[in-house]
Amino acid sequence: MASELFRQVRLLDPVSETDRVVDVWIEAGGVRAIREAAPTGIAERLNPSDSDCDVTVTDGAGLVLGPGLVDLYSHSGEPGYESRETLASLHQAARAGGFVRVLLLPDTAPAIATPADVDWIGQHAPAGLPRLQPWGALTRDAKGDQMTELGELANTGIAGFADGRPIRHWGLLRRSLEYAQALNRPIALWCCDETLRGNGVMRDGPDAIRFGLPGAPAIAETAPLAALLECVAQIGTPVHLMRVSTARSVELIAQAKASGLPITASTTWHHLLLNTQAVGSYDPNLRLEPPLGTPADQAALIEAVRDGVLEAIAIDHSPYTYEEKTVPFAEAPPGAIGLELALPLLWQQLVEPGHLSALTLWRALSTNPLRCLAEEPAAITPDTPANLTLFDPRPLWKVTGQSLQSRAANTPWLGEEIQGRVVQVIGSR
Image (cartoon, rainbow, N blue to C red; front, side):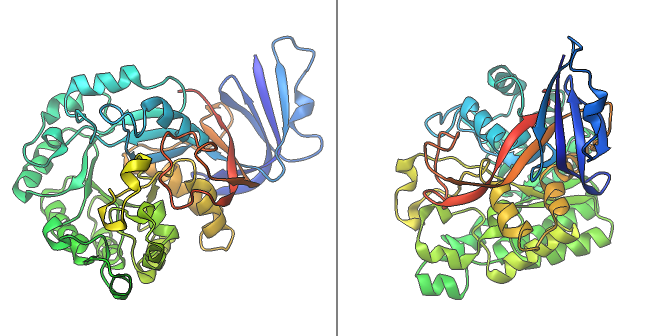
């Protein structure tokens, strides 16, 4: 029986609110024991002469061990766009980034809109961690025109219902919320009014004028958000709010939560690290949806994660080919990859300077996404299954097409040296 002992590792457990240095013994896919780190810790309790106990001892000094990361929404190229990303390459990238579960948006070709589509993903997704789980399309082909057979989809292995595209028909949305109320499945919605957004490719404001790019006003997000919150207040169906990107949205969500509305919310990792000032490089990999916010938006989002107004940080991994992204900024398809980059960059830019505590960041990337799915995470305790991520915040590495596991390399950090890397994902599917 294989065992692994991590000596003097920093254990982050958001459920029990602990951040401490301990010895952790992992055996047979579960946590066997946790003890305060000491020269004579758990190792004394292991009997190396026991033929059933093959112990690997790892010096965990400087390493961080916490619950496995969970991504609420990302994109797979397969099926339909395998030149961008396959399920196999997505699986490898997610594992390299420390994820034990990744939820896939249904905007594939065909869209994940029937039980057969869900079965196809289950049959073709690689075994082992991370688990790749699809969202079922809320509307046919995820186009927002006609409701899918929600009842049939609810009986499959989907995480819940989401299109990953803007709300278009409010009457259809209202009926969907009413119908889905009895299905006990999460619903994730992105608030964006495409008519208000127009041809905007970055957040409206002084930077858009200075860079000569069409601006998308913040009300393209906040107006449909306010309308959706009214729907939730009337109907009562729990909703997860995706891709929150403005300071005003944070205010609306905080007010709605204070009034007791059943909502959770997330922002994406790019919006915590970057703002409109970065767009001056005209890097097409900074063409994102929603567009990067102003510095005030960015500060409000960081504060909202710290205060729990935004429970989760999503990756929204969006792979594109080199040819698709090597075009002028305004013509580039929106999106960037991030599964392998999010944890090290968030750690270095938010935890190290003290903008977020290590426990807050880890919570937003691991246990809180589960709560957004109406799942209750478990504390890291002895005799529990081990789905854990081991992270080293110290090593430097250069982001290149060769160093990334993803098939795509559309990231603004391409060619740059960053610090921190996942060492290991521990556990079984």
